[in-house]
Length: 310
Length: 324
Image (cartoon, rainbow over all chains, first blue to last red):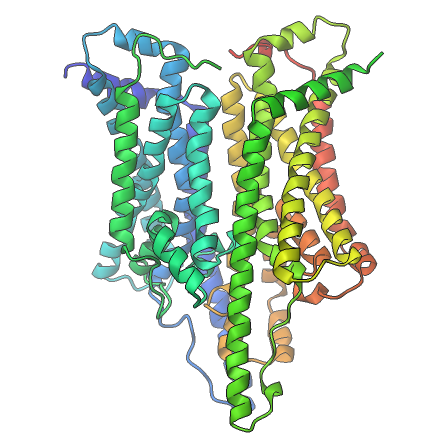
């Protein structure tokens, strides 16, 4: 295993030099920063609207309902994070997974690595660990930005339980982005063309983000990228019950959004997850399947050649 | 003698159909559109069933059925999900097609070969754009044809000539919209040191323009902060809603500004108005809608024409003739 560490270092150094990875990672971190402002700004505006509406209702002698956002946790300010992780976080993972293998294949590094006394499993393990470390770094950076904005934003009372939930959310986010990074690793290792290496994980991501939610709960694509609308209950019909049972466990983006909303305390009352399998086991199963796919693809990679056919 | 532009464009069309790329991506988009329409129709049927049950209950209690609003059925409204799939996935597919158009010439070293012919750079670029945009329009034609047939089946009545005209106009504007993303990707993949880098940068731009900008605008909408809408939950009448909203003109201007920075939002606003998906446009004459929404259509046209102009004006670098 002496080649293991140099292989990881080579992969991580390659990622650090990669401008595309840098662009995606920067975009992700900037959006994490924006998400806190978005949540704070929108909540402040709703509070102000409530004050105006309450004044009108009181003057016209009507009952004043409770402020719908007053009882929400400060964690809910980060509700947009769940969407940005599922969009840019997942795409960053796809780009990272793709580059980890594509660069070696395209640049002719693979035969060079293959000339060393190591087995394919060592190479496969090095790419898997590199992806895990790169994604952990990305999520840790996002977490650090979130913590700083939490401390800066005025009027927020954050408890120990909130910090624990926020930490668990970032662990969940890491698992979710790893899912797509692993699919990209496996797809790029087995793809005959470079385009297929990108196309396969992107197609899977598109399907789970925009097609499956429509099938399981009539969630339109623009609703799927709104943290609140994405959690709407499915219409109460036999069709959606059957589709939810069949495709709910595969609809991992919905599972992730459900768990995120639960952790960040903005899950609307009465909303239940779709499908017979709870969202966490569904995500873990998907992660295990993606891990097996990546491991199989990487371990079968021919270290004597490796370049794409097209 | 054939125009070299038409010859290259025709060759690209034949290539795309021969290796099944066109059929595969069209099938993917058709699947997404069919899922959206069928799911929407079933959800609507559920609303109708709920209404019928509530109405029967009212009538049984001796109360008038007019106490509850009957759900209205406009077949074209079922295209909402389909339009959203096209604005997201149609753009992705266009990016991939643009990548293929550039990478194929560079990877097979045919770009250098073509440029040895008596052909101006702009002619080659125009041919590639023409071929790709034609294929995008063809692919979307198939998608809209399937969607229209499905609507006719689900509605149980044929669509009127007016409905078909609305669908045709939406198809034309959708073709211009996806052509913009094809052009963007083609240019990036032609100029980038590696075509794959161009595609990844294209994805980053797509993410910002198609998903992030509209998403920020959408989530800043106070009515989207609370399930069911904040005004609905507070039971505030419409007139009072407008008065309260007027107090947040600056906030609303910022929110709207972020949204309209995205060409996707212009496409959505135009098609939702033409198809009557947005309630305020439902039932309005087509001419009235077109006059009101010409600004959105112009925005989309200028977006695509601007990108085409950039690609045509930038000369092909000899350093980028091959894959590496």
